[in-house]
Length: 362
Ligand code: GLY
Image 1 (tube, rainbow, N blue to C red):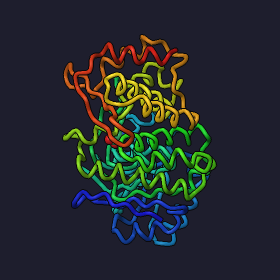
Image 2 (cartoon, rainbow, N blue to C red):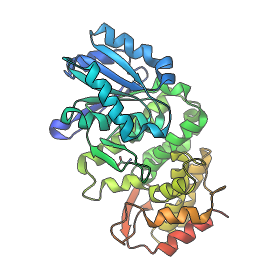
Image 3 (cartoon, rainbow, N blue to C red):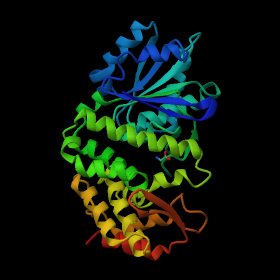
């Protein structure tokens, strides 16, 4: 078991990572005084598969609960769903000390955190991420949001969870594509911040893809800890430090949006986006060719895409111009100097980004 503390003064919390974290977790919940009624937001498939694990520990610790089932689609992350959920909490939660449980992937985590942040001006919530992607990224750091049809994540707040329970045993049911999506973000942590993690990923690919629990615990803990340290220094992304977590994401968002969020999942788009950002680092002469190739080889070796197919170039370029991470008309990209060393650079000419994307079609 690994316990990683996110130090944010009175908002500090633990990330608990192990094979079987959920079993016995209600004891921890009870001790931390979060409440006596767990309102668990999830999908039917997750409840059917793993709901009993939560039920058992909650019952044993005398915590009452309810499962709220939401459809398994990005559309669930809407303001309308948030309001419907709050109406249900109002009915359910009378005279109870309620806390929310986000039991699912990024969609459930973002929506639940958002609801927790606005219901009665903020109630406690915990994250129980069920995908590798959510375990290493979305469940940590308190970015909560819902989408509008005009833009993703456009309504939201920074609102930290009170506990993150990452249970490796839940990953056994993920398919290879979902695993790879999480691995793309883990590779990202290696490239931007952690040469040891990068080397571990290169040397233990078979074990990781075979879901060896020790190997998974290592890479999840390492990634969670990097994210925790960055969030501690720049919780609200005001100092330009948290920005490095967006390595590859400017390109990725353009690729996802340009393909109507259908062709590539987030991790796959991040994989291609990272290759674009590595290329840009090389063309701007801050990353040498050998390291560019080493990082690209690692991404490809995990079965992640490094080329763009089945999307029109023009559809990717339009969202790139409107990236919300750009400051006014100034472009801003996260680049790398070396494996494990990211830097943020501004005023990069858009035509260079455009050429780099165009080359991904070749
Ligand atoms: N996923 C990037 C962040 O949490 O800042």
